[in-house]
Structures are given as C-alpha cells and as structure tokens.
Image (tube, rainbow, N blue to C red; front, side, top):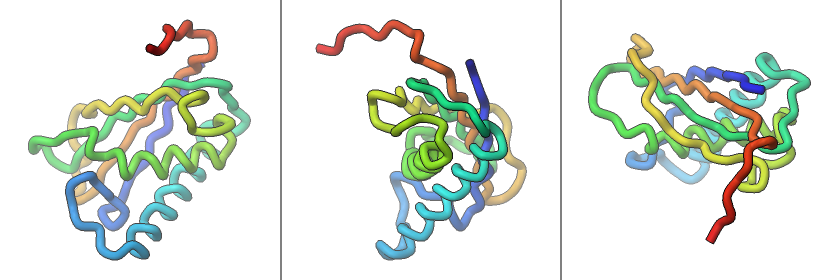
Length: 134
C-alpha cells in the first residue's frame, strides 16, 4: 500500500536546521501548529489507514529554484509526522514502525513567496525484508 499526503507549510510555521526561530515558546507554538497540520491532513487523506511499519519519503518543494538542502526541512517534517501518528497512521513514529523520513527535493516551485510544500510518500514496509543491523 502507498499513500501520498501533501502539506502546505505557511512561512510563519517553516522551521529549518539553519535559522533563528525565536524563543523556546515561539518554536513550541510552531511545532504544535505543524503537528495539527499533519493530523488534519492525515485524517482527510488517509482516514482508516493503519500501517504496522512504513517507509516515509519527504519531497520538499521550495518557493523558488534557489539552491536548497531538503534535509534542513527535518524540524518542520518531524512535527507533521507526529501528527500522522496522532491520527493513527502507525502505532508510533519510532524506528520500529517508521523508516525515514528520507528527504528529496520536489521538482518545480510552489510559486508563492515563503510557502513550502512537503509531499510525504508513505509506503507499507511491513512485508519488506530488512537486513540485520550491525
């Protein structure tokens, strides 16, 4: 099974690895808003879907074609994935249930200043053989 959940992240909620985010309380409010975005998007796009183990790929689309590092979107993607957990897509977002997210750059632009879009491709990984970890 494979589902795609796309979340538009307004400029006020975008958090990256390399940027000031204000106070602890301001960052906490942003994370809470992102978690709610993920929760609502999952309820609207995948209600009733539950995966024992999933692989997540996050395709990050930027407002422009400037250079970008998609892995810097981790602080934005993590609360959204927490929202997917809240919505019941999987039992927990720990490594036993969720592989990834793996970050990629989405082609094109959002075309709106400051708006970022993350397309989460979630694939059922419960039937996939996973090699032994060293």
